[in-house]
Amino acid sequence: MEIDKKQVEDIIKEYLQSQTFTDRKTTDTPTDALSSVNRRYVNLNGVVADRPKSSVASVGQSFYATDTNIPMTYSAGGWRNGSGSIVALNN
Image 1 (cartoon, rainbow, N blue to C red):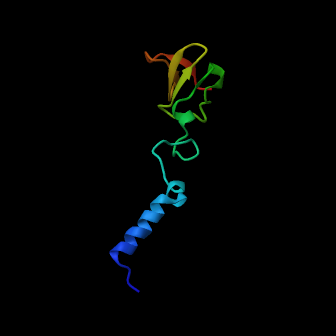
Image 2 (cartoon, rainbow, N blue to C red):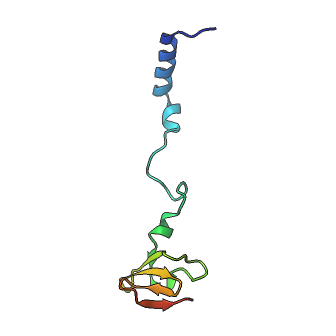
Image 3 (cartoon, one colour):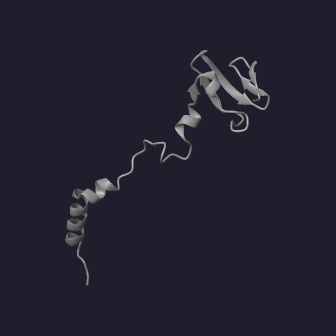
């Protein structure tokens, strides 16, 4: 059975107007459930006591302490502030 061009156009038109197309639509706005890296991990912030322990933190991970307003980056030596000084040793 051959399908002519008009039949294909009608099928595509019907498909595009149906809910099937919008249900399967993907967007470019990731959610934590669908992203490869949890946004909380990338944009981590909170009080100093809540920053990741050295056993969990990875080198280069950033953390913004909302109680002291100090941005920190984790290094092999501990948490460093913006000028590179160690503000917290490995814990």
